[in-house]
Amino acid sequence: QVQLVESGGGLVQYGGALRLTCTPSRTVYGNYDISWYRQAPGKKRELVATITTDDRKNYADFVKDRFTISRGNAKNTVYLQMNSLESEDTAIYYCVIGGPGGYWGQGTQVTVSS
Image (cartoon, rainbow, N blue to C red; front, side, top):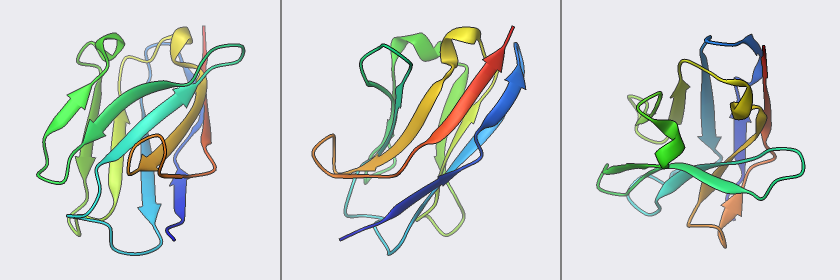
């Protein structure tokens, strides 16, 4: 069992930036891919970015070089740096390990005001 805690969400103006943090309750580095998903009101949940066990990074097309997924120095913490935020980025962002059928965090709200 792994618990995931997300932090860093909040209210930001259009064009602003936020950094989300995912902290697992135990060491997962090397064992699981870690992803960020998001779900906007009335929309389906969608994959935002993934960092694999060998540190490859994959992004959704709508990221458009605005978001960066990375690991902390201790490798276990994962960040999502979000720049040039748009109103369409407003959603609850979830940290997930082991794919959509794996472990999910409770989510952190990101709201972008226009």
